Image (cartoon, rainbow, N blue to C red; front, top):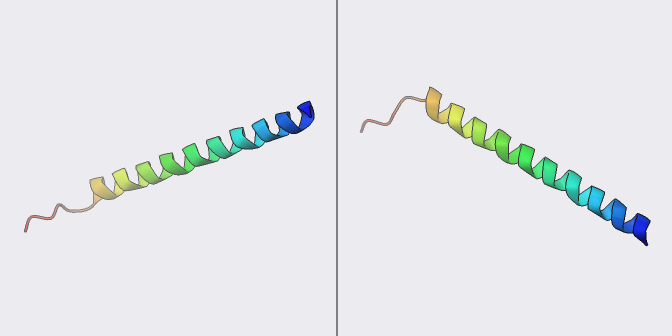
Length: 42
């Protein structure tokens, strides 16, 4: 039982790290997009 719980905690931990990295990548991509595109002056 303890082994299964430990495996589950490990999987949840890895999933949290993956979600965090994807969010950071998307945030950085959005920042670069905003910084490198010309402003809309209409």
